[in-house]
Length: 375
Image 1: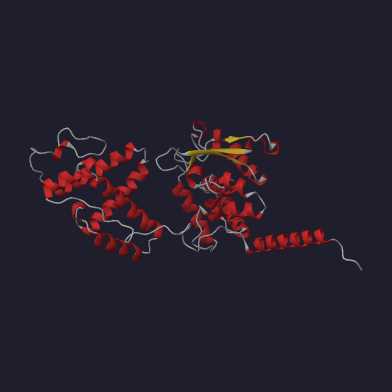
Image 2: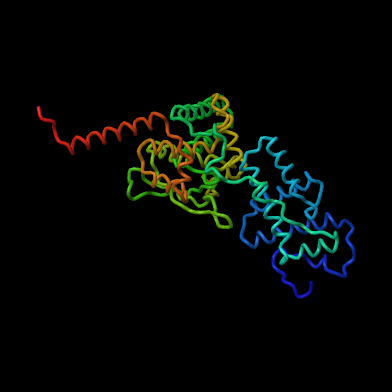
């Protein structure tokens, strides 16, 4: 293989001709393949979290088959998929596994990376693609999440916020030190809804990300949140956007947290984090999600509701309130209106009112064209 291409992820010199035989050739080649694939993905600028997730998918498939990539067959993928579906994995999850396997096999079967040459020399066979259109999940629907998932109704949302506040009051009255953390999480849940934020966008906020909106001076210095950790495109950096303040009550919540309570955490003044913890770290997505789930269960709300449902609720409630769909789309950072539409679960009452308004307008326009009837 001398003089051949040596791009990121190509077969290392360990496997070229003339090198002593490997003790555990199958394991060592597989691990080297995964490392090479990791290098190739890093070269494309993919995030570490994305790469690690794909590696876990490939490793799980290998454990399921108890075979190595150069021995994998289409039937192995089909049996693996059947097990995933038996475990009630969603179609999106199944597609994620299949996509990782497809990309891994595209990589190791590509002659430019020389893994086929290595496998032919060591095992007298080589990897081939086993993922095809006839045995993988096809993306045919815009939304494939659980049908029961939805936004919270205004009544449910108010119950959630009231319950969060009640937990703060109860802990503080009892003299429990957890009251401050409960107050922080209560404020964070309200901010997640009031600005329609994703979990990561929320927990990564800093004091410097709060600003004023000259067009809405009534909100003072809390007229906009500058999001620096928005959802990234594949291989790209986190996307930034500004989210304008919509609800007057949200200003009071955020202002009170910043000016009266945030600095009660140790070392909070030495950091710019909006949501510090008692352990001198940022509030984590996992911890806040757990808080939401606990309150949801205590209120006997549907188990399908999650912290992300607050973002869905924001979109739904703004649309129901008559905000322009394009404004809502820009607020939540969606590239396409169709994505925002998936978040919207407007009530039957809203749709009925919309229909009634359009019917009344149509009748009024018709009467204006024909003029008053003669008597």
